[in-house]
Image 1 (cartoon, rainbow, N blue to C red):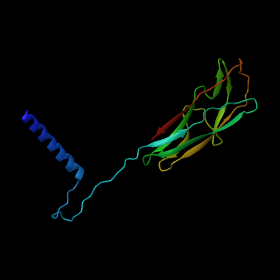
Image 2 (image 1 turned 120 degrees about the vertical axis):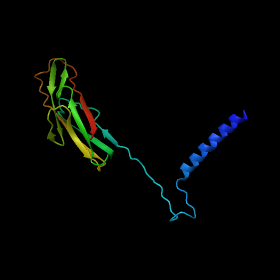
Image 3 (image 1 turned 60 degrees about the vertical axis):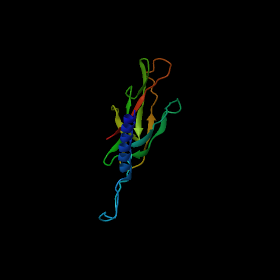
Image 4 (image 1 turned 90 degrees about the horizontal axis):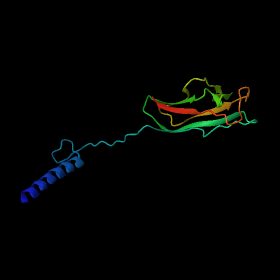
Length: 163
């Protein structure tokens, strides 16, 4: 029993000595060449960002143009990279209900947006902490293709990519 206790005590002393020497860093004595020592102080900043997208868009018989904003904030990126926000439409920029549809289009900062899949609507380069875009949804509510009464909807998907 005493041998085991002695062995455990010896291991603890070795581990404590190893810990203390790591915690101390450099040791300076009267024999040190320049009586100075160095330590490293650092912090690793992680990539961060917040993208706030509109909650919803609703057209009415009197409101055929609706503006919403998309905001990017708290941006910290690696040097040389950029944050890209893209948008795509599930129904090709058509609000659908069963076989019927109503077309609309999206303008970004008052410029027409192509009806491509995952079109980039905003880029924030490294070094900038924020960005924004005005999203203007426009329809003429042409009802030639409205077949049934009901809720005509589309789903926009916003994607964020850092490269």
